[in-house]
Image (cartoon, rainbow, N blue to C red; front, side, top):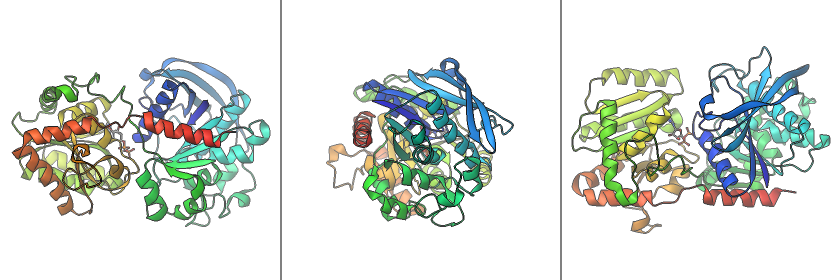
Length: 490
Ligand code: ADP
């Protein structure tokens, strides 16, 4: 099958979070299973060009309808670890993708509405006719809208769209000026409850809703989160839209790319190891301590890796740090804050704890260091408020680092409590789960993990090894995606 992925991220070239990992991992496994895949992305100035092989001009005469006229674009091609990628570069004073960052400007809606338009125009004029266009998150929500309202009449009537929602919180909400700028014309037609009108702000256009309404299949990234989005508050106002379109909505868990996330071959860690030589993991703990100036002693290291965002339960992350110290454990944090207030809070904490021999806070994004932390830590905390899938717990499992997670979203589908999960046999259990959002719930799960580490190291290591043997590769999720593609294709 020929599949085009359309997204705003693709690791390791463009990665702000899990979306980047998923777009690459999914595409890579599709290619491994014999499918043809192109990934179309914006050409940002700040992406990691060192991970693109053979970057070249692929199409130089692309004119993308926009505003009152059109914008000239160049499309570049290149390989990212063996997968075909295309990068769209607009030449205009709007400077859409030359801002030193991927997201976070007031005109983000316009930037990605433009990107969606550019993707379709490029496919249309360069004669790319995939069976499936697979779009990701709000940034690409207009692709199916434009495809079925406009491009289907320009020779693209056999293309079908699969739309994957990685995070319901960010939906791309804007005014009807976005519709006009995109040259969709007839703004009132789109500002309609059955189409793109936001379910709460009735004067607003919701790009993610457009993606749901117009796509042939829609999914989010775990079965449990699909349920939460439909029946709980996790759909952030889109629950009714999912109800209307329930027949095409499902949950497919993300996978991990084990060619990248695998302690047996990982080039960023000190010593490679696997479930059969688990004792070698200790060298990575030592290396992590040396790198982060932590004291060498017989104590567990508890880690947090992830965005510092309300979604991730930052209050509980902060609490975990102090509870770890209270229990004589060491704590390592690698996180990039998504707001100034959160950044200040953790920066102050970092200054306060700067000389502490048992704590290291690394504020910022550091791919290489994240690998060493996964390999060197004993436990990881994931106390999220909500978590559509979550990759950090799956990476930790592969690295024999025991996850302590809140039971929400994809965490429910991947982490099984050692003491209480009756749905799984003891030998299938792999971590600790708590449910409430208060600090005592977190403490009780951390307490159970720490007690096992302190009192029965063999049992603790056994739990870690059971986690390493779980299969969260892309193999099964890709089979499910291919089933979806087969179902919707012409
Ligand atoms: P989300 O997509 O909500 O950010 P996920 O758990 O799905 O969370 O994916 C997070 C991914 O981003 C993981 O690969 C994790 O290792 C990585 N990551 C998050 N924050 C950082 C950071 N500060 N430095 C390096 N990698 C990070």
